[in-house]
Length: 95
View 1 (cartoon, one colour):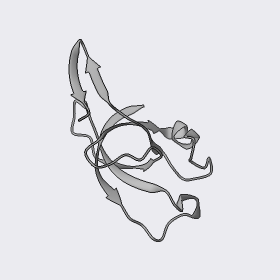
View 2 (cartoon, helix red, strand yellow; view 1 turned 180 degrees about the vertical axis):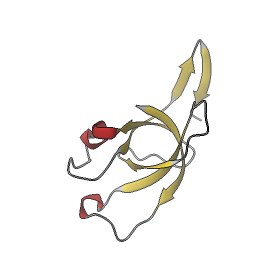
View 3 (tube, helix red, strand yellow; view 1 turned 45 degrees about the horizontal axis):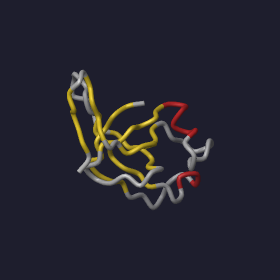
View 4 (cartoon, one colour; view 1 turned 90 degrees about the vertical axis):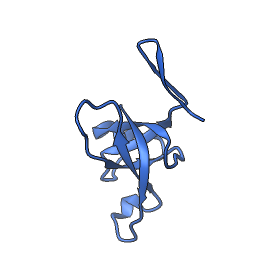
């Protein structure tokens, strides 16, 4: 899984039938040592702009509870982070 922040959303009226009803969000990776590009992830947990989330990628992205295993998905938001700590320092606490 990857840690990312939700920075936007995508609206698409013409898309694969397997994505009908899916909420698509733009996320930016956190903690990358280089400038990683934002990407689109299917939201299965009701995340919103500004929230820090966990994203399953690759084949695991299609295993999320509400996601069809036949959907053309390689990134799925599977959790909203309440608190993130590393090396005994609190890096993020949800408001």
